[in-house]
Image (cartoon, rainbow, N blue to C red; front, top):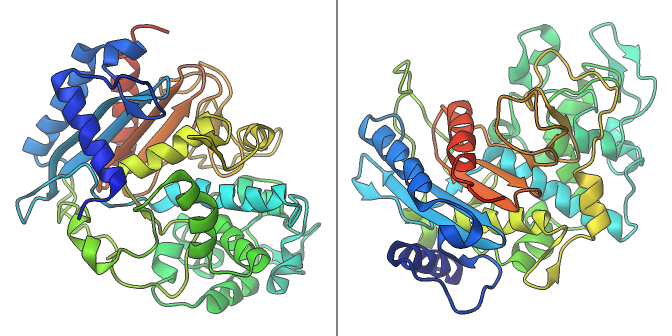
Length: 413
């Protein structure tokens, strides 16, 4: 049975299709594109481009939601939820969002910060003693200081992912939490990290890592509850994100979006974790499942500086802290996924200026994608939220594609 949130998105699709807007403009209610400064004709390029890619077997399908000035001006479900089964893509399809989990876990941690239950300069070992007294590099040089909660949020902890390199040090780390959580308990996961040397001195270099998974464990320790429960209490229920979870229940399994079985360029097999099978721990760095409609509500809350539909999740100054530059002179490493023009805030990348980046956007916009081609960004200057849900190995291409197609449809600032 469709949830109330999916019914609302279906209604948005219907109203947009017939060019009808509601009498009163509420948060994330449907609007005609021209009412919010978008071009219907130019938005149609998104639909045409993605349909063509479905027909060429580049992607199985997608769900795209675009909100501007607090209204949904574009909501399209395109292609197939499961192409092999011939199942069309529904607006409320469930997607593995991978690293798009990270901003949500960071918000949960920041809500505890607001209550004075943790501080960003706290050493991580205050909550996880196994991560105290770390050594750095294969030479096991003593760490000059302990990693902090802020280091976890901005990926300057010295931790890494095992799949980021091939040296002996990388081999000591789990490949990813998506993989590790299928075989390790949380205690075993932390024990593995506690035995591996850090890649860098804490606070000296940005390195994309298992940091947010450790942050998720900190949240559990501080709240005294599993991460899934904390997220439900502090993020999902306040924002009415009815379908966001770590484990898809049996009655929703028929809504899970499936990828094509092979990589469209190489022909190599392409498989994703089964979200209906329980994991051994809730991995805060990459294991959540969500819908385009749910995540649009989360992104809009951040764009609104912490509130949605009269419910406050974070204070405006906390969102300001989250979306500020937290790297400054800190080195960004040999592979900096945020790209030129972007710094790192807390749990997401933040644009510093209009230029430099090859992605269209505005200074102050913020984003972070998922490894399986899910993507979102929020642009305060343009009053814009975009959520793109696919399941594909071609994520970077679709990030650039959606940025260009969405921004060219903005015809009134």
